[in-house]
Image (cartoon, rainbow, N blue to C red; front, top):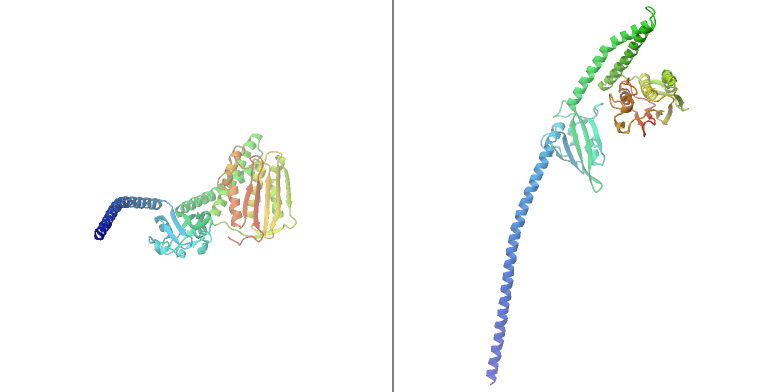
Length: 424
């Protein structure tokens, strides 16, 4: 009996084991199938991802090639520097302008090889002061003139540079500079200036002769004139005077642009010079019944300057104020010390003012504001251009305020008391 029961127990245990093994086998089969299904999904996913990566890689490569083609085709030179000032990119035009060759890596850090000079004094500009490196430091520069000369560009090139920082979260992480070769433009401009200078010199002699004979006739040196003759001759004389003024202005402009404008500084009594200019304008001031005021600070007296150039500066601005101020208006000229090293000339009026949209053009060559063209047809549009050139070449600065049209204008001129060297 005991043996029978024992056998029954063994059979029952064996059945349990077999059952458990069957369950385990089924579970393993389920897991195996799940793993196979997962593996298949992973394989499909991998193939899909691989295709997407290949497609995306191709898209990025195409986009990069397109960007590089665009950058390469830009008519101007393009240079890019990283946050440490190392040149990391430049297009072909930049390579040609800078003369650094096609090998970009050869020019990554050695900025000195470019040979950057001041276009007026031709003094070499320190590396840290070049526009691209200033842009890396966060500065923005617009159309800065430079002269490039190095072993690959021995003849030199005049260029214009616009540089801006690359900002990320408000912090500069590099710089971009656009280079434009201005050599041909400057050569053409110089040729035009030389032609104007030559033509003006040739015109000056006959105009002076006409002026001299007209003065003799008007003075009655060769006999009395009747009213009609005097009227016509007087018109000839005034027209000739305008031509003489235009020729002189053109000669002054060409001299400034060719660098042949002679500066001969000496001790000048600026108060007396200003009064002399005022006296010249008195007839026009009286005719238009303009209320004129002149003031001069107690400490303003002598300064070192070229008297003829100083006279041109004061005379041009003052005559404009008188000319473009309506009858009965106000004009004021004041001299004062801007600081211990500089003199300030301030000329204000209640005239027609300058249209706000044309403020940036007022010192341009041959420019006249729209609101005064119909009121006065005799202007040349060269006076303020000449004034600005003289002031800046003399180490000074000039600006104006004209916030509302027909409410007047205020011109400010700051000039160093010590002046500038001879023949700047």
